[in-house]
Amino acid sequence: MNPPKLLHVNPHDAQNPIELCLEEAFFHLQPQLKPPFPLTIPSPSQYSQLNHAIAYGILTDPHLARTHLTHLHAIVTDGYGIFTAILVKLCNEFYSKLLEIPRAQLIWVCSKLVQVSAVGIELLAISLLRQILGGDFKEPNLWLCVELLKILSCNWDWLLDEPLVLTSALFVYLRLLADHYRLVGSVKLEELKRLEIDFCVKALRECFGLCLRIGRDLVRLLQDLVYIPEFRDVWKDLLFDPKKFGVLGFADISEIYRVRTPNHYLLLRITPEMESQLRFLLTFVKFGNQKRYQLWFAKKHLSGPGYETIVSDIVRFICCAHHPSNEIIQSDVISRWAVIGWLLKCCKRNYFEANAKLALLYDWLFFDEKVDNIMNIEPAMLLMVNSIPQYLDITHTLLEFLFLLVDNYDVARRELIVRGVSTSFSMLVKRGVVHSLESLTSCAPLSPFLREKLTSLLAGSSCRVVKPVTGLLNKHRESDGEVAPSSPSSQEDQHKANPKLCNRSVRIPTMLPCATDNENC
Image (cartoon, rainbow, N blue to C red; front, top):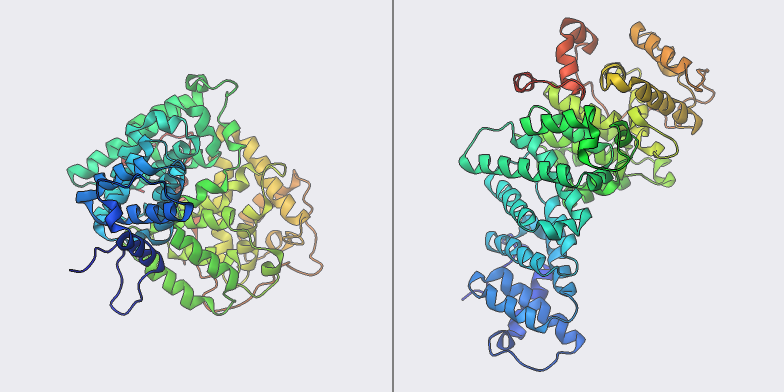
């Protein structure tokens, strides 16, 4: 009889080292895993081996899982630290390879460890949140959404003692709900939507002070849910009656705008596998060699029917959570702006392209040199200037979108946004990301309207428009697959033809669109 397995392994692959380690511990200690359990106190090395053996038994044999868990409770001396560390490693590195039974058992044992507040259980919960794939509406992924949400909802008191888990879960489920709510499907899907709405609204209403830790991306996620009745009410209170949230000192949504979102939250929508592959691309792959890696990444992660929804998450990760060293910046490694240009091209529908542009430009709107990192706004600037002259339409559409945001994103707080965008341009020149903005303000092929808007915006800032001395810090490099036009038609013409469509795709938070409007996007 073949022993039970943890991971899916192809016929010609060697057995995974961690699976081999767990399996060997299980079969070596199998006589000790059956009641009556030995009364002797294990040495540290024996204790570690016993934890590995019990983990393997729980994950591979549901029928004896309760017996193994009872054994674990009886021997634990470290608050379950070793045991949870084993599960976290499995989840982070091999979740996608776990077989169906071990996946189900992982969720089951997670719920049991939450009940005893095991050491490190918060890391396992966050690791599982990262495994929920955006744009994946297949049964296994939706199952993980439901089961993890049930654990969190049923252990609310524990969640209140783990604010990082609470805010991480809120961030993830707000983002997922924007995708799930548009789907019409089975009773299970409707149950998931209701669970997500109830959990997120409860967190916002009862723990808003904690939710503020997410920072300005909380607003970006909420604006995508304004057509859901429960969130429409949250929006109204956020804009017109902030005191309803019961947070001392919180009086206006602009206070959220001023808080930069910590990188932890932006990593939540990128699986560990995607993160490692993107970091490899942006650390080791040279200009001219990136096309094969991009095609491989796209086939792996951007080929499903709902893939477009995760492009904005990837763009946000690249801008805010991956900051290359000066050594890499000065090398021939492919730049962040070039990868983002490729990602924008991957968006085929206007709605998702707008969300990706918003993710790229979001920190520009509220930039404060005392709070924000210039590396967050660098990719958009370099993408605009390096697209001249070969891909001028990219420069055109990004500038047009930026000015649409300035004028319409939050009309009541337009002055704050104008200050943020003008400060962004000023700091990009001051820090040497570009030597001047002459390439934009004096670009004859660029729309005169956009050049006038830019000149007007800069007139009120400390950013001087001068002729460049040595050109761009990162000179334009022509290479296969670097950047490509996003659309052959001018978005300025589209805006003139149908300005409501452009504004609706931007998702202006002070304008509360109805569900019908959203469906037409």
